Structures are given as C-alpha cells and as structure tokens.
Image (cartoon, rainbow over all chains, first blue to last red; front, side, top):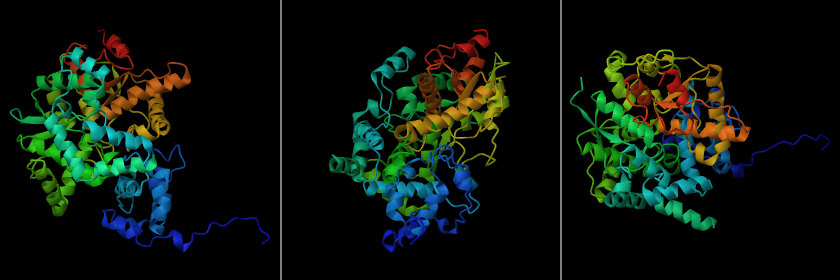
Length: 182
Length: 298
C-alpha cells in the first residue's frame, strides 16, 4: 500500500447485535429512530467544553459497540440535565439511554473511584453527603438541632435503609468490585 | 386554598448536612406564609438521580419509594427544596405508576423492612407550593419591597425537565420563578444561558470537578456581564455548586473575581418580609451576602 491514510475498521467481534435490544427493553425506546442530526450534542453543556459528543455515543450504541461504549469515561460526562431529551426531534429518551448504559457499565466493573466513594457513604450512613462536625456546629448555632431528623437521628431507619441496599444487591455491587480492584 | 394542608418535609443530604442555613430560612419563611411542614423523620438520601440512579436503578427506585412511603404513611404529600430530590421522586412515582411489575417488586422489598407502600402519594417542590399561593398572594406578605435589587434567576434542570413529568404549563422559557422573585419587589434580570445547567449533576461534581466547575464558570461570567446583585436558586445542589465553584475559581485565579452572593428563594422572600438576616442564615454563606444587605440599607 502506498497511501498513508489509516482506516479504522470495526471488526465484527466488536459488535454486539443484541446491545440495542437491551437498551430498548430497558426503556430507551425510539433509540433506533436516531437520524444523527446532532441536536443532542449541540445543546449539551458538557459537550461545549469537552470532546464528549452525545451523537457519537448514540451512534456507537446503535452499532452495538458495547465494550467501547461501556468502558468509555465519556459516558460519565453527562450532567443529566435532560436538555437533549427535550430537544430531540425524534423524541428519544437520551438521558434515560445514558443512565441505562451507566448501569450496565457499573455491572461490568466500570465505575469511577469517586463514585464508589459516594456509594460507600450511602451504604454506611444512608446519606450520599453525610453530616460533618462543621455543619453540626452550624446547625446548633442556627437553633435547628445539631443532627437533622433524618436517618442520622434514627438507628432503626438506618437499619431499614441498609437492609434495602442488601436486598437490592447494592452492597454487594459496590463492595465486591472494590475488592477486585484492590 | 390549602391553608389546612400539611406536607412532609424531605430535607435530602446537601441542605441539612452542608447548607443548614438555607434549611433554616425555608423553615422560618414557610411557617410564616401558612405552609405547614412536618419533618419526614428517618428519611435517607433521595437517592440522587445522577449518581445512584446511574449506578443501580433498582436500588434508586427502592430507596426513593421508601422515602415516599414514609410520607404516604403520614397521610401527606412529600415536599422538597432540592431539584435533584424532586426529580428522583417524580420519576420514581412515574416508574411504578407506568409499570405495575416494578411496583410489585418495590412493595415486596419494602415489606421485608416492614413498610407498607401503595404509591398513592404525590411529590412537590416548595416552589410549586409557593406558586399555588401565587405571585400576588406572596406579595401580600411583602412588607419591605426589595426595590432596586437585580436578581439573576437560576431554575436548575430537574425542576423543569423532563417536561412531560412536570406540572408546569410551558416546556421552555418558564417564568414562574421570575414572577415569584418579582413579587418581592426585586428585578429579575435576563442573562445569557439562563436555563443552562449549573454543572453539578449527573455525578460530574464528584467525578469531573474541572468540567463541572467550568460549566458554573460560564454561567457566572454571564451573570457578571448582567451586573446582578445576586444569583437566586431553589435547589440545594445548585446552591452548593455556585457557592463552592466561586471559591474554587477565585483560588485558581489568585483574585476575587467571583463574588456574586448566592441566595435561596426563601432567603430573598424572608428579606422582603423584614425577617432578620441572621434568622435567614445570611451570615453563614461562603460568598459574603453583605453587598445585598448593604444595597437594601441593612
């Protein structure tokens, strides 16, 4: 070959023909009607400042590039503002599709360390953002009770919340993955 | 009218655990305008739509349903002052109403921890309750009109979208919050990208702080251009984003370029009702609210 152009070829091994079906079944109906118009990318606040392109993500999903989509950090640049979903001329529930793909990514072990930390806090305290000393002090000064009347004030309530996260498998999902990574 | 109605107050995480000052203002102001709130005791994280829903949707649905069930069993609708929590409850109700098999699964999980749930409960944002009273109704509580105060209104995302699952009349370019702001006598100033996201959601604040802060920076620049006296929000997470991002940006720049006071709606209304700024938690902000108070001659 004399030309120096590199051509990216998608191998059939990279394609999971069932991927789109799974997305549709999980609630991202109409995703197949995407016309690649790019409205989603043009209204995306993350896309304004990063290389994240919603249109590209949807195209890759439609091609069945499961592994590439699920392992991509881009999947986590969506702020879930729902603007693309509102503006999509095909009325595709794009944000829902992204959330479905994120769930699949986590199932396969692709979870950002900061997100695992947030999940740990939820597992331990029932709050993704638990109280700290500084804010206990501020609450006291404001006269609204040092500890808020939430799970923070009730062991029974916290036990319920913890048990729910065991039943749904969240505890296992978060803690097992951590062990694998370490 | 709903004078006699009581609502179960859902606090969430950020409001009680990071910005108790806005919680205080919410409690003080709403009690004075006839909105009766009862603490939803034992509530957990909503859980957050951008993170927990993104990690494991069934866990998100089960925990959201538990919070909704606690309110249902009090015989009250749930009310929140955070757009993220509002989004979670609205969507969680939609899921179980549309999919009976999901409701059945949730009921079983909750039964295992001793909680009954029928999904016969509604979720409201405090702004909905305020708008039910209406701008003219709110105006009746105003004893010190905030004339001359220039406010940049930030709606946030989950208060408005997905519009199919929200109660507002329009799907774009809402005005209800501007109307509530102007009922205090302040001016709602238009600025570029007013309806743009604050950048905190979707797990971005925790995982990609640089991108998240840059989205806030863009909005802050537009607000500086519009020469506002304060940013007004109705979401504890947007509130956090604007407070924290300004501190971060100033640190990076090595100068105090970003000093726009960040007000929660009940703080603004409280000022117009002549409530002591300390009672409204205005002395406990990361970005000083003094310029606002000085402009009002306080």
